[in-house]
Image (tube, rainbow, N blue to C red; front, side, top):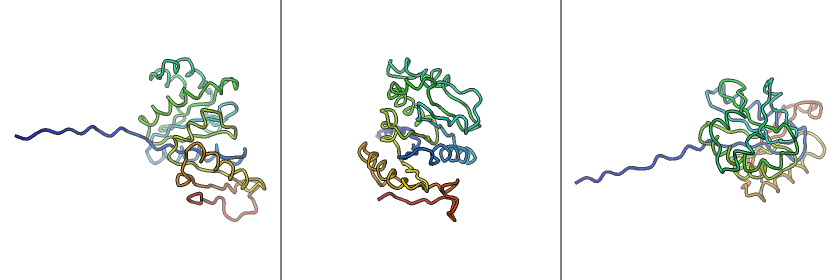
Length: 209
């Protein structure tokens, strides 16, 4: 007699790519926007989180006319789960295959976003093909949790004098929240006035040591 065996289907888990930096204005948001757009051209469903929760403007870069307040997830997250209507109500459809969440309308609510971000990220991992996360220089609990959960951290720097020092410090911080250095890649943005004397627009070094 043959015994029938069934194996549980593996749970879907989209890769999470997080852009981090120790200094502002180095191009994190631009890089995240470009990666999301490129992913959509490849036929992937890209979810984008702007975790510069207080002052993020990724919706501007992605052409959103009416941004939605991610803080609307605070109240429903108290129950320990987010429903589809909650998630859809705070989403911004940027283009076919690209959907954005964040930031919050009232900056003072940023410190309340750790649990909502964790719950949202859990859903987006299952429902998307790839998740891109933009961050701020200041790491609250929401950013730290997202960085710790990422599959790849892009450490973004530019040609500013202090960029190398800032990059070194953010690498150490990511290490302390549990990100192995083998999951970090250094991206140095050489566009703009700071890098105009460079011959190459960007440099990618893999991995961070």
